[in-house]
Image 1 (tube, rainbow, N blue to C red):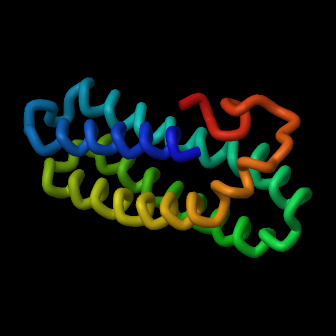
Image 2 (tube, rainbow, N blue to C red):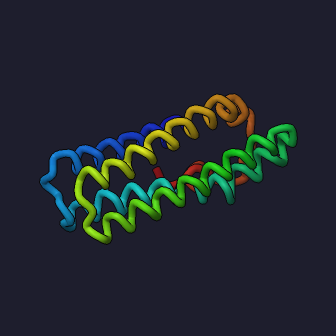
Length: 139
């Protein structure tokens, strides 16, 4: 999980750097950066919601409230990603795009830190009936 989160952090940083350099503007490169990052983060959360969290809930019912909280975070992050995609589609200027990315970064980091603190030790003992990419996403 930590490795996937680190890759997503890196993807966000690359996207923020692309916006900060101003070289991308509303070009194809920026669309690819944002689309790639948004897709990767969305797929990660969808895989957790469908594969990982049900397995954790079955093995550790005491974590169901924690999992609900994490799923709520996923929904909030999805809304932020939608707003970013709309800003990119409407050719928002770099400061506006960075404002979206900064908000995503703040919520994402808080979410990842909480998720890792709550679930990493559980994952060490969890007997998944699926492979890791199916449970955590392709990263």
